[in-house]
Structure formats: structure tokens, C-alpha cells
Length: 332
Image 1 (cartoon, helix red, strand yellow):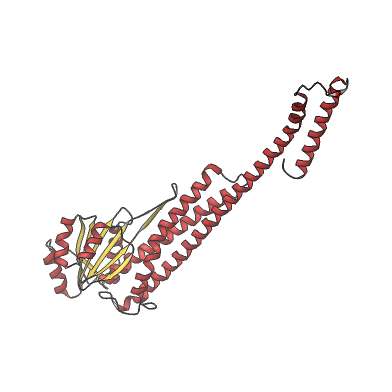
Image 2 (tube, helix red, strand yellow):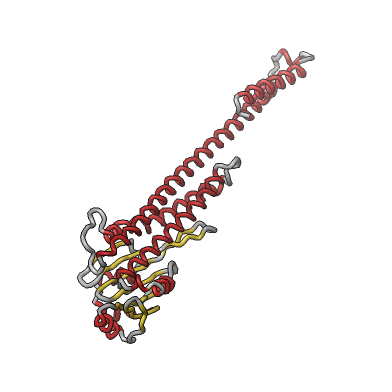
């Protein structure tokens, strides 16, 4: 459905005709204006009218309707297609959720398509309407503001993930070692959330570098003002910080998982040593009692008056000897 539609002229919002064709013609005729249409999870029929009016490429339209795309930037003859993946994080459940946000930029128009509940664009639009100097840059200003908001939220999510990972690390390395039955599962789940986060942030680096004109991406991107490169460069730098932070979190959680598994292995070895020690101590009297329980006729000590207390004392002495030996070696 169409959430919002407005013409922006000289950085100010003006209400235009309801007909998209007339609104686009009016925006192009003004020279310093552009049309911004916001859609939320449109159907094919709802998007068909927008496609025809703005001449959007069918491959980009297919991606916008189906969603489940990687962050990317694609240049077509009449438009520019950019995909972002906004991210949100729920600390209580350690869950990272991602949405999708697509932008079509062309001659005097911006079409935004949103999937999921992450990062509603109404707040971005209101913020931009309070900054007419940004809107004066036309569709480029909208693209920059959305990219900046998405990446800034990445920084917030990375900070929250880092805080929760510190708590998980403290739990794993506590004297009790956490609940061993669930700790490994928690660590693995956390690692999966970091992987989900990386799927949103890492692929966005090349598109932002291209918008910023960095490295091999020196060519000008159509429909984007060349003077906006420093601003996109700033966003790209922030994204680099996010990716470095996420990479560090991924390495740390892998190290925590390895340390936890090593702790579990050590504990299992300690348990096995204790069990083996107690089993050895139980085996000695059992062996002696088993010998005397065979009821052979020719066992001289059976008719010895002191045989019973001597055997009991022998068992006790052997038990004490074994206990002290295992205790000294740290098995008990």
C-alpha cells in the first residue's frame, strides 16, 4: 500500500495531485522539485501502477516485490535501485531481526519500498522535513539520510550485542561456569544472531563505497549528485566501524565457545578421574571378598582364629592407602 506521497520543492513539502503521472510531471516541470512515494509491502497489482508511471526496470521490480535480497546497488537506464537491510535486536531473547528497504531513484522521483517492521520511514521523512537544506539535494538527500539512519542503527545494535556478549562471557567464566546444559546452546544461538547481523552489514560496504567514489568505485553514480560523495564517505566509514566490531564479536564468541567446550572437557576428565578413583577403592575389598567367597576347602587361613580381623584391617589399610594416593594426585 502507499503510505505517503508528496512533492518536495526547495526543501519544503507540498501536496501535489493524487494522480501519480500528474504529480511526477509537476515535479519535473518545477525543476527544483521531486516526488517521494513510500510503499509498505505492496502487492504486484499495487506496484504495477508505480512501475508504469516511473518506468522502473522489471528485474528491480521483481526484487522489490519478492524481497529477501542482499544489500546492493544496481544501475538501470532510467533509475537507480538500492537495497538496505535494517536491523533490530531484542536483548531479552538475544534475537536479531532484519527487514528490507528498497529505494528507486530517478529523474525527480524517489520510490521507497519497505518490508518488515524494522525502521519505519515515517520518522525519517519527518526528520528530513525538519531539515530543508538536506531535502534541497533532492533524491540524493533522501538516499543519504536513509543510509545514514540505517548505518547509525547498526552501530546501536553492535553496541547492544557487545554488552550482551560481555555478560555471556562473564557467565561462562564464572566459578560455576554457568549452566552447562544450556550455556553451549546460548553461545551457539548468539553466534547465529551475529551471523544474521553480518548478512546485513557486510554486503552493504561495496554499494556505499561506490556512492562515496572510493577505491575502484571512482565513476559517478547516475541520479546521485557528485558533491554528495563526502557525505556517503562518512556513512561508509561508520559502516567500516560496524563491520570491524561485528568481526571482533564473531571471533570473541567463537573463542568463548571453544573455551566453554574446553572447560566441559576438563570437568568431564575430573569427573572420570573421581569415578575411576572411587571404583578402584571399591574394587579392592570386592576382590578380597570375592576370593573368600569361592568356598575352596584348602584355604589355610579359613581356620585361623585371627583371619577375619586381619582381613578387615588389611582392607581398611588398603583403602586408606589408595585414598591418600588419589588425594595427593588430585583425583579426589
